[in-house]
Amino acid sequence: TMATSGSVLWPDLGSALGLMFPGPRKATKTKKRKPKKDNWFQSCTVEQLKELCRATKLAVSGNKSDLEHRLLSHPSSARYAHNAGRSSFSSCRSLEAFDRAMERAASRPAGVSVNAIKADCAAAGVSQSGNRYDLVLRVLQAKSGVGSPAKAKESKPRAAPMTLPNPDKLRERMARTAFPSDDVMWKWSNYKSKQHYNRCAALAQKLVQEQVVDRKLVERDEIELAWEVVMAVCEDWMADHGSVRGIGYYYEGGYSQADNLVELAKKTIEAGAKGEPFLGKPIAFFDKCQAAARAYGYDTPAHNFFGRISEALRGE
Image 1 (cartoon, rainbow, N blue to C red):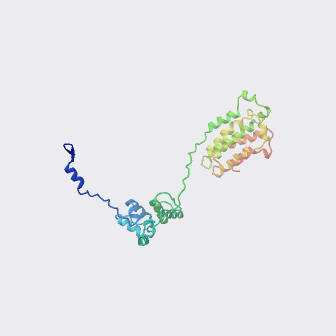
Image 2 (tube, helix red, strand yellow):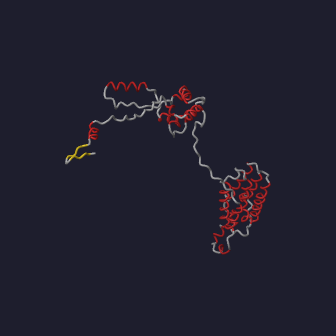
Image 3 (cartoon, helix red, strand yellow):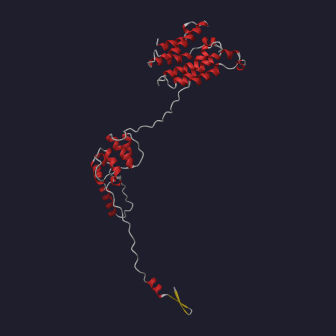
């Protein structure tokens, strides 16, 4: 505040004295420095120390100091008790300061860096991810054989659940190919008509391969279903020779379509299904197909491809 006297301004005496003679300053609080930790185990929680003790096959009773003492006393865990400190000499401005820094570095316990722990993990065959605690825990577990296995298991993609084939739907699919309408067949050329039976056989072979062989139905103990699928894709069009064109050209052509069924029949017998009642239907069916081939005049051993399937199913 300012006091006025005429035209002259006089400063307030109290304010002037306060500026000239300030009072004592308030004492500033100094932050207390945290005491330096003697070892790395002191920075771990009690639960982490217990896990490290279990990994080293040590007792987990007692307080934190007891757990630290046990880990420091064991040679496997004592190796990781100290971090690898860095010695800094940049602040040294004299030879005396440099000597003191050298003494401190020499008195510091030898520590292990994170990179060195990762190298131990690599040598033990465990994962190298995570922080220092995770790495030390894995190494100790690998050395003692406690906890997770020494070798890190690679995660494999889980296979999708297999959907079993539907014989009725496969029968409908074969029927659409084997028995087209008259309007469709009248547009066929002579060559296409002659090759129709071969096209049906190729489709049947493809369906058996995809639905039975590739899905390993016999190996999964779905043997009866496997032969239900075979009958669904073969029975109607192979038995009805009068409706499906080109049967003679099929008999004259290659018979590789039967090879898959012969191999499937052999696997069926090897799986212990010889003499099972459900095999009676496919045996009778392929015997009938072989008899139809003989009726067409194809009675040589080279044309016995249907008979080979029946013989394999009988275990002959």
